[in-house]
Image (cartoon, rainbow, N blue to C red; front, side):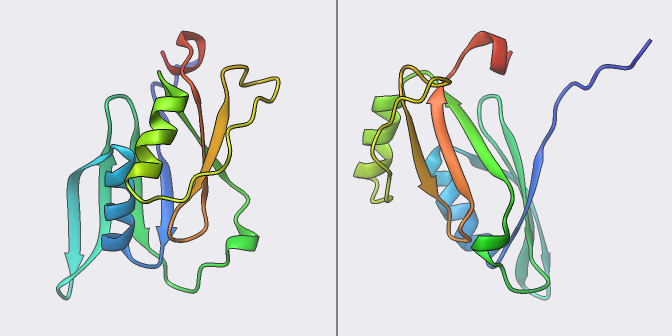
Length: 127
């Protein structure tokens, strides 16, 4: 019998942990804990209602063209979240309706070029 995986957490290398913290707070995450080295925050654990994210200072340059990862963010109200993030000053893509997101999907890009795609939460996906 296989031991089930209870969660998976993205560990993201970023140029500036404080700048990324600010961005992800705008999305609705909050800081749970941080680690500093020589008066610089180099790592953070961020959480939301049902999501977690680790941020770590990259040891080299970040190349947005080489990032082969997308983050899907599941929300109850896609249009409402898009309006909220736009009002907060973030650049949000137009709302599209691909087959996997009949209620809509939009994209936000974080300070390091990582793409976050927002779609409607479904119990099958987020429970």
